[in-house]
Image (cartoon, rainbow, N blue to C red; front, side, top):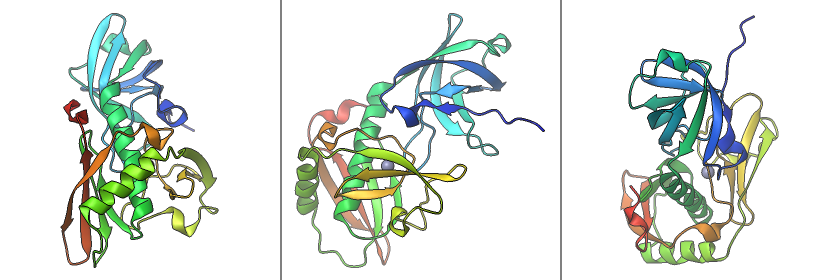
Length: 245
Ligand SMILES: [Zn+2]
């Protein structure tokens, strides 16, 4: 029986890890498969990571990261050029574009706080380094941008801890999946759950900060009706954090 090669997702174990070495397992045009990765692959509304690789003195830019379609536990890196064939089997030193990723971690965790504030099904979400949004199935709106801004910043300042743990598919509570539309990918028998005790608890595969106090002050910049039942809430930074692209 063929053994399917996979990438060890180091970002699942430690979202703060910025560098690591891994073995080059496969090459395909301008893409590369490594045995382990600090690069988060696009999914769950969060963009794929960028950064750089060094392989035997040769530098490559990592322009994006994604899961294999056939084998989602394989994580492929989109490179700036075709890698040398001699890379295969060699050690690659990874460097994550940390500024961009850290903004994604802050924004992503902030969207969990938003889910804790708004008791409605999530219909879609998009995380960016500067602007993020969630669509809620919320036919009537008693909420205002100013009210959401104040409540979010309160939760940020309350320094809530953020924890991740795995549960079996069967034991995952009904409330753990916030949406039947936006389902996080699951692998094997376990589901990853993110909990901010007393605020939010849901299945999620993304990267998060350890404590809400790490999130820079935010603003709810827009609340917009996007369909008969859906309302889109947009979040951006309150201060000078917006330089990170
Ligand atoms: Zn999450």
